[in-house]
Length: 258
Image (cartoon, rainbow, N blue to C red):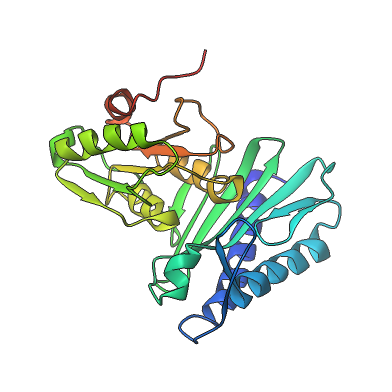
């Protein structure tokens, strides 16, 4: 599969599964709590099943890793990484800032990623060397190099796992023009389309990050974990435009792993 075909495939899966999730949105569905304490609904599960069915019918030898149903064919050379509803807490409160994330990978190399935002009708899709596309048009991060004029975003500013990172985050926000918690994948949409300069997550699973890395990088941004390492599998993320990448990571103490 070439890069363009990979982009078309992840976009197709994201759109199909995201539209299924949208059918449940603001319908008063029951919420359950998973073993890790996070919420799940029939919308998450049905959307992921939709994605898996499409993949199984078109690429039956590929592996699949999804948030709701785990891993299929873990030894496969190529695998799909799925988050049917990124932002379930927003979803269940009727807030439209959620999305569907789909990535295609070989090992830890991401071949293509799509982020679909059904309530607002936005689609981001990217692949290495192919650019980042927002609703069919090329998109770029902002060129803002002055932190005092920047908008910085985070999913959750409480930093319960690493309180010391919260101290550094608050120091960063004190220097920025605007600080908001337009979180989950929606924050990365704003970054990739030039409407914010920084988006961070203290905790991020691979199904959250895999689609977002090529989207941010192909839009001209920088996507790393909190050690400064370029990866979707570091368990957290700092995403920025290129102009502020070094300054922001220095302020957050995100030094690159030797």
